[in-house]
Image (cartoon, helix red, strand yellow):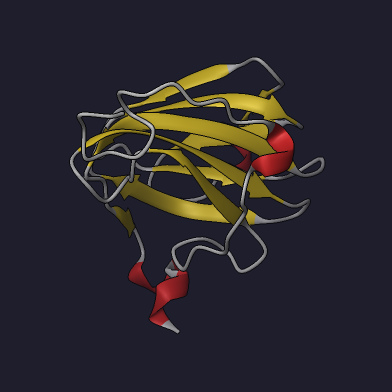
Length: 140
């Protein structure tokens, strides 16, 4: 039994890939999917999520309010740093690569050569804000 209010924290659990539940997330491009594995990124405490992005999708420059650690699980994750999407600033990261993205650092991604899956861990609560508000899919 867990003594924490965070799901999966303080108790033994095993999560297999086939049991991961993918959901749309309003802050991402329509085709991207998010899976919350441990904790809850909008609540205080540690969390682990996965993000699956299909080929061709781009995340325009954005920031998040907490430090994050990205681990590439599959595909090639192209990530760049800056307030404008710039293909020349992208770095290709294959499976096993890890990127540490400090809070408030503007960055962007592209599924340039195919889809990718990254696992992200951090300490919540975390919020996401786009550099250009017009890039935010939540605007409708």
